[in-house]
Length: 189
Image 1 (tube, rainbow, N blue to C red):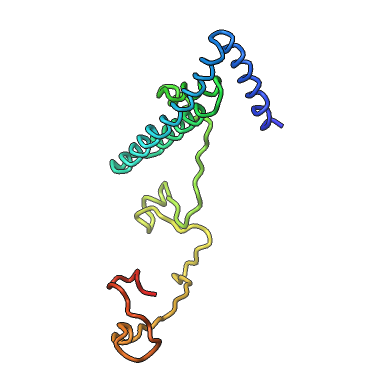
Image 2 (tube, one colour):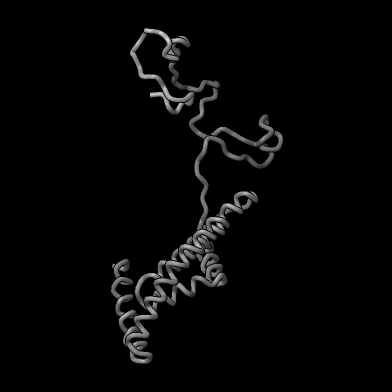
């Protein structure tokens, strides 16, 4: 029920704003405002989306955490999408999201509500006296489910390559395959 509420309230707000703004500035300027907002939204998504991708790439090249540029880029894309949606209220929200201070405020609010939990991997970090003076100097201990006898289960298969002349297609053995083009392994069929 709560999920459907914005889809009911948003059109009512947009219609009310259209009536108010249309009465103040006229019908044609109101329609022009909505169209200009949509064109600006597409331009924002193209330009700022490419810029956000470059920021993420630059962060990764500098060995920095790319989460912040990714989050800002996602909010800019949402801003462009809100500007493309026909309506004055959504366009105003999109314009607000284009302001870096507003994006930072939203991200801080979202980060304050998030809780980070770890994923269970095969090794875990050990702290305290055991981690400092134990037999494992790196402080890594095997997690639950590991066998202590040092056996690792696995499967393998041996595949024999045919002799060189057969592989090259220089003998009459095997199928009469058409000659291959190039020496690349990608062209073998």
